[in-house]
Length: 481
Image 1 (tube, rainbow, N blue to C red):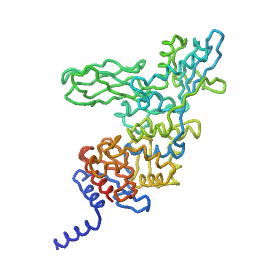
Image 2 (cartoon, rainbow, N blue to C red; image 1 turned 45 degrees about the vertical axis):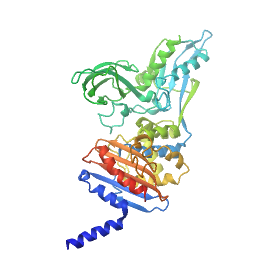
Image 3 (cartoon, one colour; image 1 turned 90 degrees about the horizontal axis):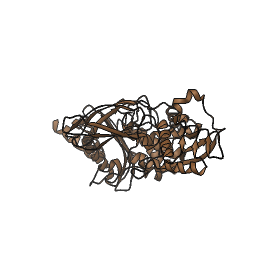
């Protein structure tokens, strides 16, 4: 009887084919004994399901959520859409080149402004000199009022409530809003000594007024940054805990910028002063003075100039290639701003869901942000494959696919399937956070088949890198399907 059972299993394994065999081996791997898994692979040209396992189970997938944000931006806004920042003045400019009024920075949600992804190193804030030259060209040599940065069209909700407190103070937890610059980050500089000694905090850039940092960092025999910055949006009192490599004369830790709106006004004031242009009432953020201003209207202000940001295509490239959270959320918010002239995460998510519910599978789909940092997101393999298949037939397919990291070649998939059959054939967005590992994307098999796939695993018992190696066997099997 035992012989017949073994023979049956062997025959079943033979009939299943290499993809299902690889999937079965993955599912029964000891590292996944207590894991939750959602997997599906689909032939996009025929609609055939190649293999599946709990395909409709919706799980938090981390950064593969960005595939929805970028697809939505391509489809609703178009690859050439650009967000912009407008500079206004109120009052008037007299014959002595004095502006009797305020300069206004009206944010339009551009996440590319002063971004390291679009600037040479240490040149990220050079746009402020360009702005200053434009002010000079308008005949302004003295500003009697203030520089007021206004991000109010996007509200001031800060980080989504579903983000973890251990995320929001770090660079990857920077929130997107009406005004974004320098990737909404700050650089915290440390000096470290021998193992076990306290690291010395040396300062920050840009310099945030009133910033207080409780430092609990120690030097250790580690090779990279192992710290966590704690602090909510708009909060100036922050703390940092963890370890940094020992005996470093200068080590940079990146955190999220507390208040990009006010900070941009402050940074421009500094550049104006360096150019001999005094701002009598200083720099202000609209959030902090909103009550005394009783709102603001731009119909009675003069627009001095407008600055267009990078295109959806350019922003989406970095969003998926390097998994930039603030870019993904910025693209999502742009959907609402384009439609309503106002934006919030809630309104943007509603637009996104309304769009996809008539075009792909959305039953059971839950999204609370555009980047995937929320553990309240719930997306199944079927949701991803349905989205990817729709985009395969879209006029934006090549634009969209070009943003994906390529296995063994680029981005977050640079070491995936390296030297194996999947190298150069798997185009995949990755997702990673504690207890979560996912990939979703396209595969061009050796037989010419066009495949959409998605795999998300929660609560595995090995490291994320070890799980990726186990996932590679499935991806390589699909690459030869």
